[in-house]
Amino acid sequence: MSSRIIGIDLGTTNSLVAYVDEATGLPRVIPDADGRPLLPSVVAFTPDGIVVGEPARRQLARRPADTVYSVKRLMGRGFEDVKDEARYLPFRILAGEGLVRLAVGGREVTPPEVSAVVLKALKERAERHFGESVEKAVVTVPAYFNDAQRQATKDAGRIAGLDVVRIVNEPTAASLAYGLHRLSEGVVAVYDLGGGTFDVSILRVKDGVFEVLATNGDTHLGGDDFDRVLALWLLEDIAARHHTELDRDCVDLARDPEAMQELRLAAEAAKIRLSSEERTTLTLPFAGFTYRREMTRADLERLVEPLVRRTLGPCRRALADAGLSAADIDEVVLVGGSTRVPLVRRRVQELFGKTPHSQLNPDEVVALGAAVQAHILAGGITNMLLLDVTPLSLGIESLGGIVNVLIPRNTTIPTSAREMFTTSADGQTLVDLHVLQGERELAKDCRSLGRFELRIDPMPAGMPKIEVTFLIDANGILQVQAKEQRSDKAASIEVKPTYGLNEAEVGRMIEDSFTYAEADVETRMLIEARNEADTVLVHAGRALKQGAHLVDVAERAAIETAVAALRAARSGDDRDRIHEATTAVNRATEHLAEVLMDAALKGALGSRRATEILGER
Image (cartoon, rainbow, N blue to C red):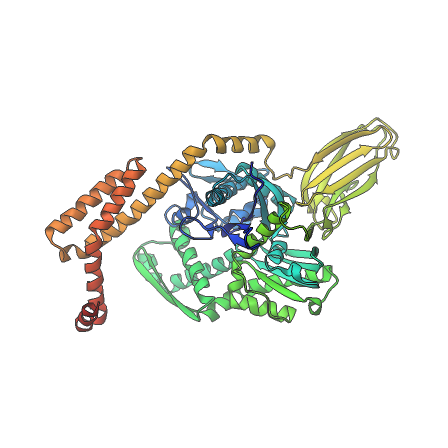
């Protein structure tokens, strides 16, 4: 078995896998077969099987109810946690106790299962690159992920066939990627605004030791929210400008999942363009009308300003928790694709009073840092040490529903803590231990991580001496032990959060992944071939409709024959036949495409100038 460990950034919008090149000592992202480093974190459940990445992303507008995106925002959460944002998602989230479940493609799945599909695709990408099996990984999570969310991430890794040897906070990984360990001494602020979450961490670096002083953030704030406010603004504009068309065609775009996905994707594309350009134009065809709108960067910044302001509060709280002011920060690092928005960079610079680092690709920096941490764990780097923190306080419920905190938030991990408890009733033989996470004083206001029982001998109230020990490992995962000192009776658990998967569920998912591994690969390749065929058929049909009169009868007949053959092949299960038929249609339509391009050029420029250009060509 290979001792290789890969680094994975399991992102809300995109995910990546990276490693450290032994020859150069530098971390590198592993691209797919087409050279694309990013894998869209999108999973589509189609009648033919499951697809992931770019093919799934293309399904968003066609099959929105069966295509899952932004699943990271649902990891380790219950329905009450996500019901407010569920109304914005096209797929159905089922109400119920414990971990949320999604109804997609005629089945029910959990967020860890969906994330496992993404992780498995990254695992396969790494195995193709190295030509050997890869079984170990470092996976990054937002610094403000709680215990349930970290457990869900580990569960996803196990389902994907990966041993997650370390979970690392994303801001800490970014610091590793920037090589900030080369600072002789300094304090670093890492501002991480991704697709679905926001984190800020304050780190002290000294002699290769990374110590996280404080962390804060918002797990319900990210680039997805930028896209949402922009899409809603566009929706209002459409309703105002195309009121007549909407009435005439009885179209309510807000209730049309496919139209809303088109609008969301257009909003995302506009946001990306306006991050580097001052203005852009949107053109969206809807049933009965076409919507056109010019947007400026000022429009975008006005809409997202409240969201950007929301990130500054956690920054100030993290500074206060670390006992520092903005003037004490030596370096500021930007992480996450949403930090490309110029307004974000300006506000960060204003807050910290210095220009932030942005030399590395913000989409790749976390994966590169994960690769560095993986290299450390594999023994490739020996002069660095990573000391992370727990983002939320951990404690136990005591009499009256009060929370007794054993490990305060921002405690460096790994760590342990002990505290003595006793009973409140005579003859008590059972002690119920309720483990909690949060910053509130009452148990009802904190998150329940789990319960377990300790059986003790009957004694008068106050006589038992029950020692409770909390132990947090380097991944931020909690173990709790309880022992009655007089009788030596003990109980212990690795806390399985209320919203975790049980061992049987994880085991079944892992077993299924092995049982259906070969079939899954074949199915995915068949689906991708069919998707490509569908795209070619649409383009060929459009070309024939627009330009059949521009070619002779024999050429038109040859195209129609090739199209008919592709339709027949596409309905079957022979992937090679579909590829061959797709290639045949592409060849048959080459000349027609050239003729249409010439005709379009003449129409756009005038026949005289077009003839000159065509003559030059």
